[in-house]
Length: 247
Image (cartoon, rainbow, N blue to C red; front, side, top):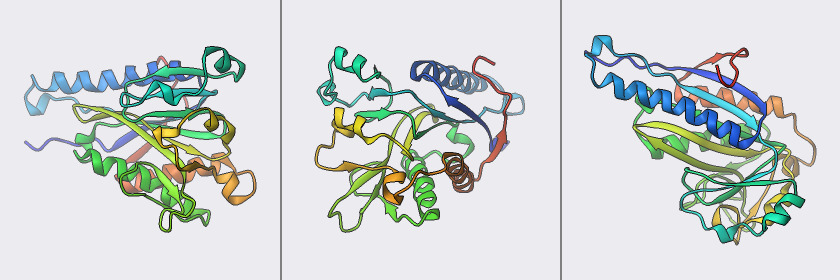
């Protein structure tokens, strides 16, 4: 019997939420999906449960996160300086090096069972990047990829002044994903000066409002990113405004 694929994705906009609180919530949803998959292995196909998919959007207070392949020395602040900046710091279980999250940045956490879509992590990362590239094109900004580097970049062709506008860092287990992307819309770039972003010291960071020379409507950008993610993954987004953390 062919396995039924669940293309529905529950969309939850968490607003501004503490990083650790959101991380714990991700872990909860991730764990539930993995547990369902493990349980399904003991059942005949006709009794197996569909796995849930989620897309979380959130804006974090100032925080620095260090991935498994990162170096602590890439954070250029000690505990006292962190407190003075009103920022927190966490070592986490995603891939990648150090990055910054804060107000004016859209952070997206897809918690997807890729068995419902495609089992290819490389393709998954490229689709996350492509959703941001297409969104930037909606605003007249040409962006793309730089070979050997993750994320979305401006001036990616000539590379006279390449600058990253979206960072990626994900975790996957049993084809279930967590963590995701951080897209600078109206971000305070001064906070990136306190780290070596993603371990890359010779390239700059930028934000949509800098490139466009004016503040950007963040809700509008969220809508475009959602639209492009849905199209690329052929997902059916389920708007669940009543879904709250802990439900």
